[in-house]
Structures are given as structure tokens and as C-alpha cells.
Length: 278
Image 1 (tube, one colour):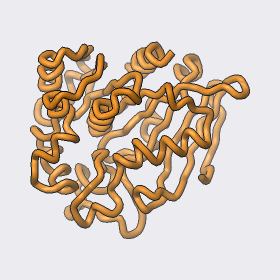
Image 2 (tube, rainbow, N blue to C red; image 1 turned 90 degrees about the horizontal axis):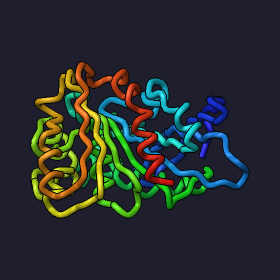
Image 3 (tube, rainbow, N blue to C red; image 1 turned 90 degrees about the vertical axis):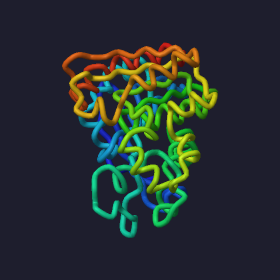
């Protein structure tokens, strides 16, 4: 692991790091905030998955999480959203909603993406191992959250591994990618045209197929340009109601899809996660 930068913040350390990933076959960059803590202490970890076009840097620069994490004693980890580097395939049209910056947190099975686009394995297996080895992290106290495409990732990973994550939340998630254009494009590109395969990477479908967590926490801005065509929170709301999953869905008037929205409610999410990790 190579240290790119470290900066003191709120008594803790905000770092940016790079390592050679076996999962993606590329170098991967990620951000970690470690709050001030007693020597030898092991701290709970919040995973934050970013949305389309983002890197580790977007939430690090705009998410306003460090003060709350310092107070609550939380490590905050922000991975990249896709593999990058020479030879890594992109969307054929270089569009923003698939390819570079848009890994959708799946392990691709279709060429030319299958070699590098293995973000599910990276986020659920490889990077957690590295974090546990290199930082004062307590693997028994993890939670996961994300925004938009990253909200999709947080929900699907949390539903697939309910025993691993003590809390799961999202900002403006793509809750039912099988039913919206962003998902149609990306899931077909990475996984092929068999929609039965897509269901493992669709929160609403996972819930319909029996996946369960005790509760979910979602904030959705009601002035979000993507609300009605891509995000469709009412589908997640209906699935949770039918399955008996406790969903707190806060519809926030006037807020859009940007980090102005995320940063406003970030502390609420971090406090919710901290209360469930002990």
C-alpha cells in the first residue's frame, strides 16, 4: 500500500492511498479517515460507496463527514467507483453512466469488462482485508452507505451480507436498477441480457427473492432531477413494506442530487450507523 497523502483533520488523519488490486488487475486509490483514538483501540468502520462519475475524492472533498466521525469514533472508507488505468475498457460511447467511473459494484462476466470490472469482489473482499490489516479497524463492527449508484451498491451488498454490516443506508439510491434506464444499460453491459442474473444486483429484486435486513435508512431529495426516471424510491418502499423490513424513507423537500444534499444529512446517517455498531 502506498500513501499518497495524509492531512490532520478534527484530531484524526485523512489519508489517500493506492495499492495494486488483484480483483481489478489495476492500481486502485481509496480514501480513509481515522479519528483520534487510544493506542491499540479497534474502531468501527463505515464504508461509503460513491455514485456515477465519482472517485474517492468527491465525498472526501464535499461530504463533510470528518467532524462527526471524529466525535463518534468512526473510520470512514471511500473506495473508487471503477477500475482505471491504461487498457481498462470504457463505455463505447464514453458516456457517463457505464464504464470508467461507473462500475455499478458488480463483478462483470461479459467482455471486454470481465477482466477489470470486479468491484463487488473489490469492495466486499479485497479492500476490507487491506483495511483490517493496515488500519485500526474492527471487522466485527462494519456498516455501509452510499449515494445513487453507490446507494445501489450499499443496499445490494448489505442485503447480500446481512450478518456483516450492522447498518445499511443510502442517499438517493438506484433501488431497482432492473426497472430503470441506468440499470438496463450497465447491468446488460457487465452481466449480459439475462435479467434473472441482474436480480442479485437489484435491491428491490433481492428483497422480493427473500433477502432481509432489520432496517434501512434512505434520504431522497424531492428536487432530484433523476427522481422519477432513475431512482424511483416508491419501488423500494413497496418492497420493504411487503417484506416487513423497517424502512425509514425521508423525502427531503427542495434538495437535489448533489453533495449539497448529501452533506446536509451526512451527520444523521453517521449517527444512525454509530448507534447500531456500538
